[in-house]
Figure 1 (cartoon, helix red, strand yellow):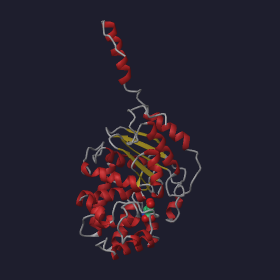
Figure 2 (tube, protein in one colour):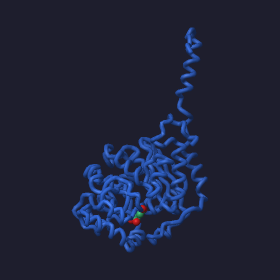
Figure 3 (cartoon, helix red, strand yellow):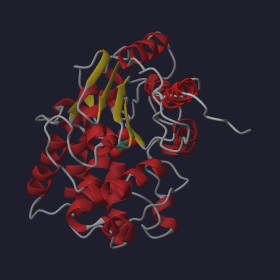
Figure 4 (spheres, helix red, strand yellow):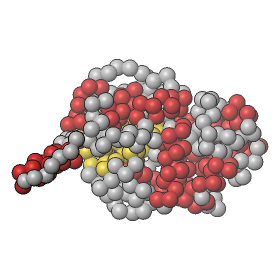
Length: 342
Ligand code: GLU
C-alpha cells in the first residue's frame, strides 16, 4: 500500500502512529510485582528443610523474603530480608569467580571442567567416571577443588581471600554462622572423602582436608536476602557492585561464571529451571536462591523448605514469576515490556 503524504495532517498522523508503536510499554511497578509473588507463595506449605546437616533442620521454615537489585542500584524488597541463613552452595559461584579472576576461566574448565554431571551434587560416581574431570564447580567435588585453587599460602590466607570476595560482592562484612559451621564440620565426612578422591586424581594439589574445612566455612557464611540479591546484581552489572561501585571481578569473566551457573546451578533441576526462566542461578540447601538477569537485575529469595531436588520451593516459584513479569529472561527476544503476560 502506498501512502501519499500530501499534507501536514497526514505527516502528523504518521508521526502519532509511529510514536504509538515505539513508545515504551508502561513501566512495570517492580514493588507490586514482588508483593504479588510474595502474597501468592507465602502460605505455600511444600517441601522440607534440609536435615543432613543437623543445624539446617532447626532453621525457621516460615522465613521468607525476596529482594531485587537493579544494575543501577535500586533495591526492592518484601518479607523478611534481614534474617540470615547459611549461604551453602551459593558460595560455590563466588569462590569459582575468584579462581577465574586470579587464574583465568580456563583454570576451572581445564581442571574439574564445566559440564553437568547428571549425578547428585555429592556424587562419588561422578568423580570416578572421568577421574575428577568433566564435572563443574557447582557440585561438591568441583567446588572443594575450586576452594583449594584460591591463592594463599595457608588455609587461613585462602579463607580471608574468600570471605573478602564475598564481602565485596555483598557490599558489607559477612561472617560465619558458627552453629552451622560446627554442625557441618562434625558431619562432613562425605565431603572429606570427595576431596581425598580429587586429591588422588591430582585435581586438588593442596591439603584436601584443609580445603574441605575452608569449603565448610564458606558454606556456613550467613546471608540475608538482600546480600544474595546484591551478589547477583554485581554479576548482572558486569562484576561491579551496583551500590558500592567496587569492581569485584573483571567483566570479562562474568559470562563464564554465568554459563556455569546456567549449566548446573539448581542441582538436577538445572534444565527445568533454565527452561522456565532462562536465568543463570544458584541455589543452596540453606534455602536461598539467587538469579541473574544480565544487564538488568539480580534477584534472590530465601525460604528454607526444599523440594526433592534440593531447591527452595517458594524461592523458585517467586523468582520465576517476578523475572517473567519483568522480562528477565535473556533468551527472550520480545521487545522490552511486552513479555509480562507469561
Ligand atoms: N555445605 C553443603 C554440602 O557440602 C552444601 C550443599 C548445598 O548447598 O548444595 O553438603
